[in-house]
Image 1 (cartoon, helix red, strand yellow):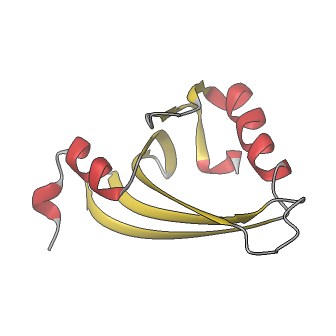
Image 2 (tube, helix red, strand yellow):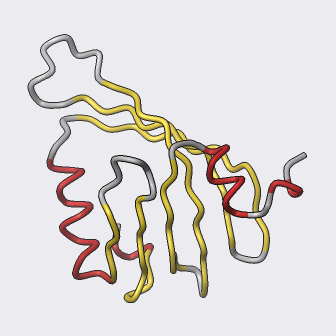
Length: 113
């Protein structure tokens, strides 16, 4: 996962109950490890809403099953992303409540067809 990020990348979770800000690989490593170690199964659906000059806006839905989920149904969580890419790696990633919020914050709404 870290190979996708620049060494000085920043991830900011802007949701109301967001997880905060994580700077560089040293902070991103435990952030992603905690996500992957907390679930038994994980699937992410990402739909790109707009893109321009290295900035991508997406609406995402992640389905996860927790290890103690006896029903097997899992949970689905929607969220939005603004991703800034430079030199083929993520430089900054911001998480929002959904794709519409991310699109509004990005200023790229005019890019949507």
